[in-house]
Image (cartoon, rainbow, N blue to C red):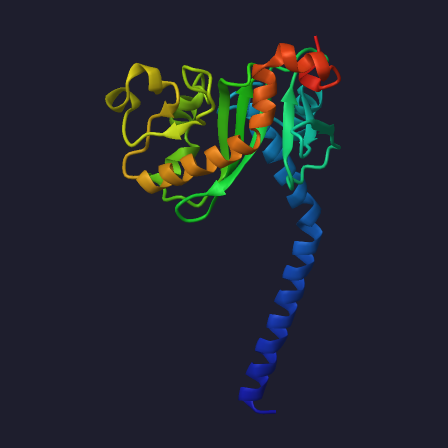
Length: 246
């Protein structure tokens, strides 16, 4: 057997062994990967309503325990009403996560953010307080934006800008939330400042795309927000709705 043939057979055998090992590792780690994805999502949901703190480490069991004690997952039907869903973390359709303590009134609801950025998808969660109008928190757990520019959307300084902002204007009409080009205080009158957050220098396109995506998402969930803003009249005819609990 020639040296060339030996080299070819060795290379082919090595490739076969490596590919087999990689395939086995991928299949063997799939359950662990899926579990880690679920834990990361739950951690971001909890973070969006302030149940867990920034820059602190939590074990998987802690996250699952806090999630089970505080969060209930529903799906929104075509009429805007919630349907109890299981613990499956797939986010097809219109899932919504309600935050309440010991079956009390809803303190906040969390909706998934899945929208386009400059280079790819931006994934996260937006939490709205029980009044149906005030943003309680915003998290980003996956994106492809440029580090140091659009990538700043995942940083706490940017996400914290959302807390306390409104998705309605001073007349009570829905307007969503927008990312300004620059500082809000420098660009808008007092009556509009609550509907904008400070933008990221050098990341105008990321801000525009995130603004567009958030408006589309919040528009889809507006029936939920409206029912909370009109809670008294709404609950007279929808007493079984979770946010009508007393």
